[in-house]
Length: 298
Image 1 (cartoon, one colour):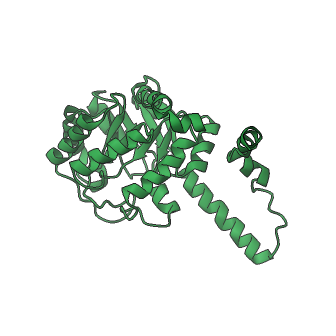
Image 2: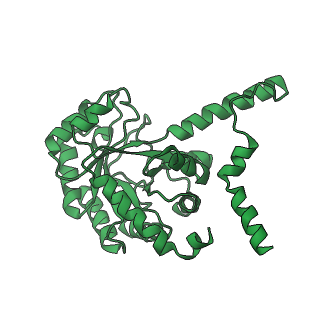
Image 3: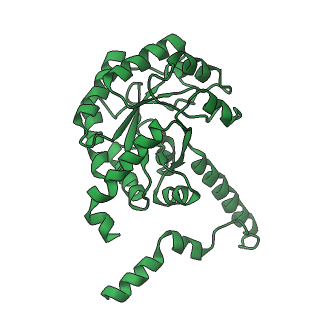
């Protein structure tokens, strides 16, 4: 752990390269949502090659709404713990960049300093609203958002740090032509990949974009709503990266609700067969590592 903290450049430089390789891979790749140090470690141990630091999940675990109620510095603290406990790359859900180009590029610099491999910015107005909600979505001006991307690319120090532009045209109801226009502008601005988003329950919007996009740049998708689409369809349509975006959060909420309800109603701990042992908690916390260091230093 001490080596990790004292030599960040050696620990972190490979993460950006790994994320770049994932995004540019000719094979379909996957990353999984995490929202704190513990869930990030669990994702890594499951075998995933990368982590999606979900804005929805991080804000939810803080108990606030996904509309920039948590400041970017508060999320940065969460990300520090995630990066400290893992070695695989983390792609942050950076919302709109928390302001204009200057706010966004400062976030990029701070993410680099903490070993985060990349950030995804969405082309909406600050403060944002969650894309899967029922409210209306206001999109940013194309040129303004393109300039934000360019500023961030100009400001990053590590050439492999990845910036993904998330296009919300389908979410806002603006259609395919607008999505293609926006993503082409973002490509010209220097973005590393585009994320095309849809809240439809089928793959039709995403498929129409992919066929017209014609592999100009890697495409990232978030199949939260169209989850019944066979994964092979993503491969056939040359998707580069799929994000399982919020499922660890949702699984943990369900488990905590059921456990709390059972204990409240029964007033005892009998029958809690599906919870982790205390020893497993200690293992995930690396308690043995401290015991080894105690023998060496105390």
